[in-house]
Image (cartoon, one colour):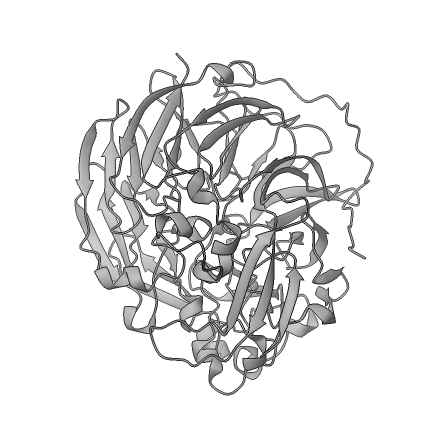
Length: 604
């Protein structure tokens, strides 16, 4: 039995009035009664800019702009385009500040500053090491940059954190934070908090040890490192660490929950999204899968992989942690976004974080303590029977547990999860979260794995395929209070793009078969679509120029793990290629070509 829990009354009046879009983008946003709300510390006025991939520290990816709305979005036209000349997956979100649009490309991680007619103001091309291309497990992507303090902050695939002067592209500092020889790479978008650039590593399939690091935004000096595995001192667990659940309490669990020394090559990389609550002064993020995939090789809980951490940005000290999935069986990385919202729980407003996890559950957690308040399934799940809210533990299905020389069929969801890295959005006008996600299952066979630095360390053969219904992707509107879907749209391929919501009651997302779509945020009705040159795995943004004109921008350029079969030119006959994803995407090349292009849209 899959368990679904309600945070307040599960009865929802579908006819409840929702405020109409305001006529002025700078008017305060008004929220529907008895619905979830963004935290009070978010600004209530829209500045028209987009300075970080998540739009804000709460990771809502919501814009208060409403010039483009559900009535006129059908009239959107291409304003201009910009080609990067590159063919890997383009997963980054553009950044807009004042009068300039900034983009960072996949390897070699060039940065371009563009005017609002598409002209190039400046470009920066780092000397990114070629060897890094062969170490990236799932395409040589980059997920974006951050503007802060007059600077642009981003990472390169070969493990450098870089700060540029946003006015002219001058390199201000460049710091090496990882080691290619160990198999480390970097694909994440950083977060800048309190004068610190927060960065994490990729390489969980290469036997690396995960970490989050903080660098001084002025100098690039390394300030602290919080490892995901190992002794408490190196995980930055001290006297202030107070996990909610008993299984997460104890000393040096990052060592004791592993076979001897395997924590040193145990994964737990930090390549996803970070959020920040300035009132609580806590950063939130999740860690990746343990290595190798074959669970027989690493008996124990394998802490602190697949874990949500709350840390102080000043020194990285852990305040609480919750291990989503002890002893991960299926590569269910816990790196997805944490949306920071205020929700009614039994009539009382609670500070929560909402996490749509790869394991198929939408977790609603108290962000002050790490308590799980609800965990409802949003995709077909047959490997667990829900979450025990008293213990916080998953009820795992024994017959679905893989191991050495053992093949388990029809595991749902597959390794990319119900939702992988592709970030969701939240609208305070509807109280809904918008989830771009997958509908995939897999067969999994455990093999031996031998660790050699800088080489794959997986121990599993996987073949993925479409889940129930035969479609491979879904776009879902989710009510986090009731813990249920309100509407959804089925797509042929995984919805691997990010999404955003606007005060115009429109949500945007892209498909891998080249469609960029605008959807009515209340009803799910398709309002507009435009066919671009390559499948979309990027993140849409919207912004406003000094004259009050609103734009929407998106990268096309198929790739990433889901599109590696096209961007990497893989043989569709090899179902185990791309760690098994190729088997589910054999027909993708019939629907898209590769090639990176930025599209910017506006009303006539």
